[in-house]
Length: 132
Image (tube, rainbow, N blue to C red):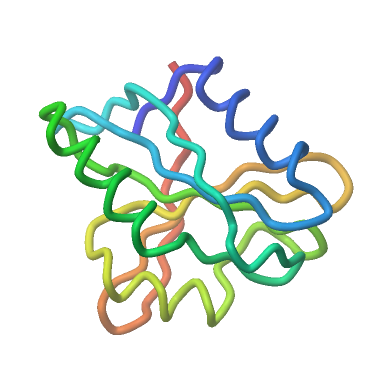
């Protein structure tokens, strides 16, 4: 996924705003992986250790992106107390989203943004966050 700096800044701001709890949301992309918009969602867990998007909000956000002719290119969330690397909870959630990137904002220390693909066997592969 290629993402403009202003969209990445919006994700980081969402992470900072929701801290100390994790934030979550989706990134709409073109079919060829260019980020178009950021769609913040509510972490119904309101937890610093995990996130969950409510089923109705998940459905509405997904359908809004699809109805606009775009794709869900990434699901993003923050890690407020750990490194930006997928947890077991993230891996389990990713089963439902094959081919979608997992953009994680690490707030422990300096802000760090990393992205991953997680296959249906739980194999985690880091992919570059291409700015531009």
